[in-house]
Image (cartoon, rainbow, N blue to C red):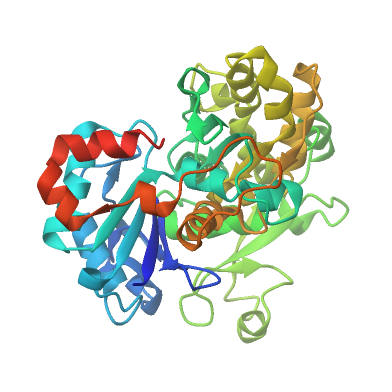
Length: 416
């Protein structure tokens, strides 16, 4: 029976079967165009050229699944013959959920999976738990399976979570959350650019692309800030930090491009048609909110401080190993320079040797862990514990009907 892994993030769904090498990435939202008022579910927005001023309706509110009518529409699209070609009644499902998910939401997920779609079996677990399962390959460079001790730093769309694991179990007293994620960085970039250059407050789709293509994490923020003084985008050719982003004309270009890197779209667009957005210190000042949330009005520490606090809250015997086994995942973790900056900041605050590892694709890190779980984890030679197998973890539809919602929630909690 095929096993479907669904990393159900608040920004995108990473979905695919255990036999696949990589998942589909589907936007987890329903969008409506401003001009034509057309509605697009999930990845169907990629078929539209009218992406100016999109209205988004997300199933998630502050990181938790609250709008089931919206989520069901997206899931219907994901399971359809145009995407995953899923037949739920003959498919096992592994699905991720947010950290510290509410019991009522957990019961709703179980009910939808078993009663609405009628999946054959279910495994429901936080995305950080799945990421920990696949951490061995990233940290040690082999197929040794899940490390006995690992610290997962998941910087997603809504929040950044720091979660320590020991022998497959979450150390709850060490869990930390920073209320900065990809969505806040995009909003921060929109506000900054709208104040300085063009009004981009309604252009979430475009500005998210600008963030992904242009932003990076500075290794020395004040040095780069001083170097960027007087720079106005690519118009000051002597400054390597400046560049110009050509905004889309929705004919030759859909989301825009960095000037000089537009390829065919740039050849077709004349200089008189191009509307240019200059960028300089915005490129590294926006991601700086990850380390200084006070920049966006949040009275809390950055992710480097959350990492140190999480480790220090754990048993003293585990601290050195946790610092050496830090796994960085999540969509925002793909920002250039983030791993190096985080490692440097944590090392200055820690007496232990710090080593941070990032999967080849941090966006799909949790999905790859779910794939390893479905295929059967390998136990490292000499390991003192055996990770839970998917057979122990999953519940069939018949067991769900026999146990009832509350006991099902308790069952999955045992494996977190």
